[in-house]
Amino acid sequence: MELTQIIRDSLLKAVSYETYRNLIDKYEAEGTTSGEEQTEERVQYTALNQKRYKRLDKTISIAPEQADCIINFPKSICLLVITESWCGDAAQILPVVHKIAELNPKITMKLVFRDENELLMNQFLTNGGKAIPVVLFLDLEDKVLARWGSRPSVATQMVEAEKAKNGKLTPEFKEELQKWYNQDKGMTIVNDFVKILEDIKKK
Image 1: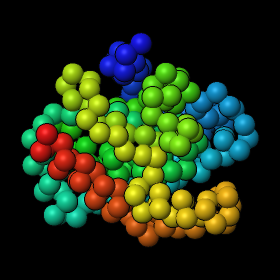
Image 2: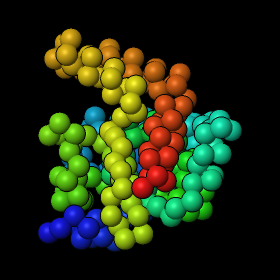
Image 3: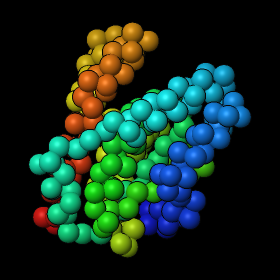
Image 4: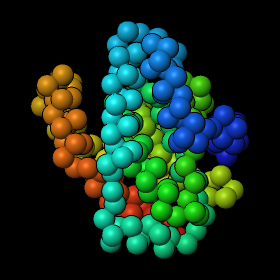
């Protein structure tokens, strides 16, 4: 199946950010999680992420200079996000992507669950793995203009350095990474997206 058709099939299952947030409310209340694996760990991560989403939805703000670039972006695009409720990186990233999309009516944001969209996920692996979130920048014909993920550029460098040093991500490093997210306040994500939007504008 060609990529455009895979994307269109996934878009039929896509939800808005508001619906996605309501689903996480529901999962937390029920003591469940999204995805195929209903493990205790993932249920706990979903509950923890719910607190992160609530906090970041209220506190994330975009600096005027970057906001101007987003507001003045002239093309209609869809940000299609591949995610799951238990993903810690997604909880730090998606509220920022939502704020970006809110700034410009030409930018829409839709979300799909990774495990429900295996064909799509397999097209956008990171080093052979199903790392999320992944954000696809789509034009009006559902063609992929750019892809971002699964982490902000600075965080990606931190993760690569940690893996080169220790061969894996330790629990201590994961804690450090969450601290970095909290200190960065979404700035790196916004800068990454502004750069991608500028590149798309030139095409």
